[in-house]
Image 1 (tube, rainbow, N blue to C red):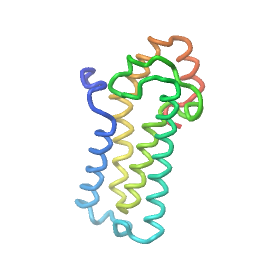
Image 2 (image 1 turned 90 degrees about the vertical axis):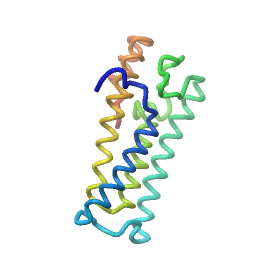
Image 3 (image 1 turned 135 degrees about the vertical axis):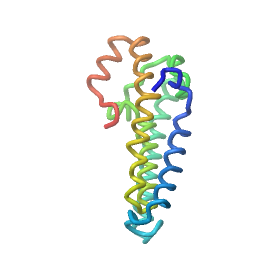
Length: 158
């Protein structure tokens, strides 16, 4: 992926495009349908639970950034004033992206089509290449050994 694309596409837009692709795949491949979209109460409950859990993880990450008085703007990682390593950041280095992935998983469950699940690894790949690796490069420049120790101890996703 060209470097000029790094930090140019807002992560929610990436995931919205993946969600749209998931819907299109589900429509285009009816033979991959496991259950009707929104199927049973159990399907709806599982979809909502995954989406809610994802939202809670993303919110926890956002709140930790706010507490640290650092930027939450994913398009401006050079504005980071603090390396946030507490709270949810002790479990994952990217809770906001992980949370968005949980929302997409809820969407995949609701769609009920195995092909829709392809949107999740696509989202992870795009976010890793366009956002996470470039962010990590910048954090390593800004925070040096402190970031390197943190990255060695906490996984990128989970």
